Amino acid sequence: MRVIVLGSGTSHGVPMIGCECSVCTSTNPRNRRTRPSIVVQSNGRTVLVDAAPELRMQSLAVGLNQVHAVLITHTHADHIFGLDDIRRFNDLIGEEIPVYGDEGALADIQRIFRYVFIETPPAGGKPQLNLRPLTFKFELFGMDIHSFTVMHGSLPIQAFRFNRFAYVTDVSEIPPDSMKQLKGLDLLILDAVRPDPHPTHFGLYQALDVIAMLAPKRALLTHLSHHFDHDATNAALPPGVELAYDGQIIDLE
Ligand SMILES: [Zn+2]
Ligand SMILES: [Zn+2]
Ligand SMILES: [Zn+2]
Image 1 (cartoon, rainbow, N blue to C red):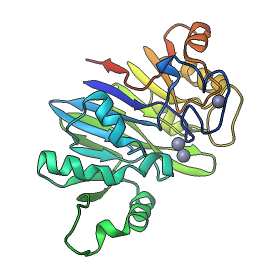
Image 2 (image 1 turned 45 degrees about the vertical axis):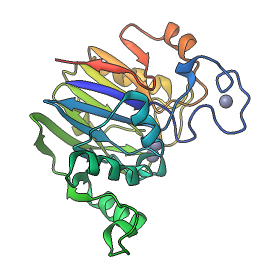
Image 3 (image 1 turned 120 degrees about the horizontal axis):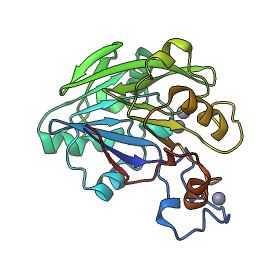
């Protein structure tokens, strides 16, 4: 199983428009962060988690030329505004693509991307999205996937576990039942938006506390703002914990 971090940035992206801080003006490519998304590849199939506004550029950057399914954590703009780019993957695989989300997410997608689901004049191209409600446990391309709820401020959203890897973005609280789904991980990718606490995201120290409790073999932090310089932050993090970066590839058993 392979995980590729397509985007590791917060909703503004890094650099942030009009910001001249040392991270936004840094020449280190690891301080350039597009909006948050990953792919998980297994048995020659690719699952995209969220469709960031930069999906096209992210795909070009890592040579991604196939997507076979999409999982949606929630429908904030930084997580779904790339869904139109799925049409290119429809063409490449010659099939409609299943998009899994909770009921609220699927309703939002039908409203926000209304043109996709109504009859329109036959010109241009529309993504062919087959909306499917999430169930707690399902199998996709030989992977056991669990979806479970975490709190993003007052909004319940979805986190996902694939075998011994889990992706938990946009989280400010993990309910006890969901903590149980996160035991025994080889890799955890977890939200840490900035050093200080935040109303709808983990700050760095909350994320580190959760990582210490769950003790995954390796943890990567994502949804990162311009408050984190990649190299300086990594040098100060505990062993086994690093900032994720755009284009990062992690191979797992
Ligand atoms: Zn977000
Ligand atoms: Zn900045
Ligand atoms: Zn969000």
